[in-house]
Length: 254
Image 1 (spheres, rainbow, N blue to C red):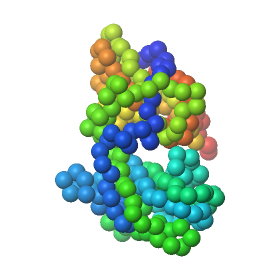
Image 2: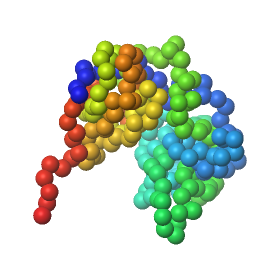
Image 3: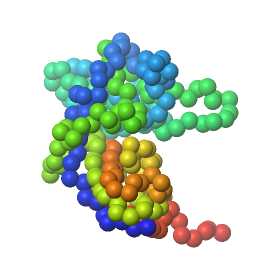
């Protein structure tokens, strides 16, 4: 079924969210996601993790990041680190500057000899000009329902002409009849995760091939519903519903 398109009007920058999601974990060295002292000692299993430390010089940043880390100087994105890119140049800075790395857990293998080697986040030390960085503040961003319960209405702000990314975008909508299955299409959005009524619907990425996400009718309510989008890089202007999936290939290659 197709519903009316949604236009987000309020948002929250990730940097603003950090002020009300609880105190970060403080550590001399980076801690991978699974070994964080959260969830009653069980660590973090999914989502994102943010590392923050202070640097006083530019140079070459290097380390092992799993799976994909977006690197920020203060709040400015300067690039990405992943399996292939293990080094990145930090531009010239003056004085004390926050270095931040937002790491996405893309999932784990479920068989093979390396099944017990699936650690996520920063693995081992992080180096600047071959010297290990110290004194990290680490934020667990699992984005479970309890995470979003801290987003009270008064914290959301109107979307500025130039939003600060990464960011959360909110849409509320009403369904008058019995909800039906549909598909979400985020044309103009780049990369992130969609949450419908507090549940993680899935990831999207404009590199494709898939262009839609299946939204089951039972996930929706008759009455008020909400969608929160966590966008890493660039937001579109609208969230579209469609009754047709776009999976990226409409013919087979023989």
